[in-house]
Length: 64
Image (tube, rainbow, N blue to C red; front, side):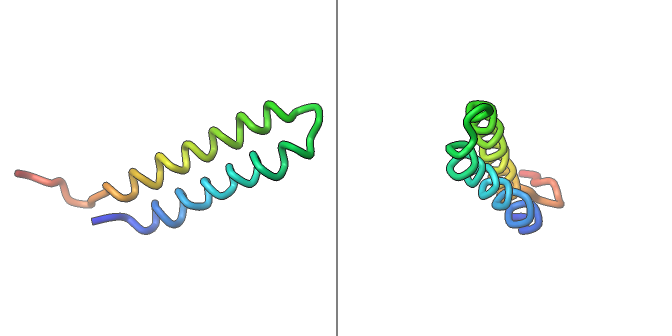
C-alpha cells in the first residue's frame, strides 16, 4: 500500500521546486548560476527518491 502523504505531500513538491529552481531561477542569476542549478537538481533528485519510497511504504511488514 502506498503512502499518499509521502508521495504527494513531500515527493511531488520537491520535484516541482527543484525543476523551477533549475529552469527558471538559474538562467536569470549570473554569479551563482552553477550553485543554483546544483541545489535545484539535488532537490529534484531527492524528491524523486521520496516519491518512489512513498510508493513502497507499508505500515505493516510484509512476511512471506
